[in-house]
Image (cartoon, rainbow, N blue to C red; front, side):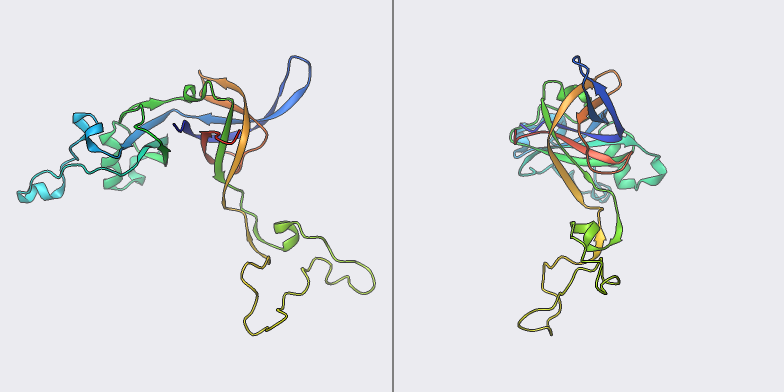
Length: 238
């Protein structure tokens, strides 16, 4: 079963160990999250109250309510961090209110191998990770704009002497040996937009959990800037 929660990166600090050593940690606000929807393979597995979908516009035309169909997989859709209702569309507000929730800024889905032990409208806190020793954290990395190959891929500089001062940070030749008419080969490492990509960091140690404030302290760094949204899951690659 996949155990996870949505959160927000608050920043980095350090914690001191009993032996006097210190370790760098990232503070993540994990929850509270609202269960917006429960996905299932068979509709019969859901409670009776969840087997019928909300009335659609077709009902006004004399049509019957459309029954809910199976999703084909198990999962839980979570919502995190409130936002003003005026920033949401009417279909989104209807989806949120069906779960007894207000508008949410960050909505993501977690897959499960079996029917999740949650139901629509439940509140999840950081307590779901209480007995989890290590987690995987996914987020969007910091955007670096248009960068060269040295900053983007870690290329080495060229020699700065013997008349090469102008081309010190250039990547070198990019032409093909057989034909230059086809341009740069596909997959060639070139200057371009760097960052702003989905990144997952595996096996981060859970140092401390503060259930009162819904905080989790993870050893090391996580992707993204401060106040960036994260998905924290139980690690399966320990």
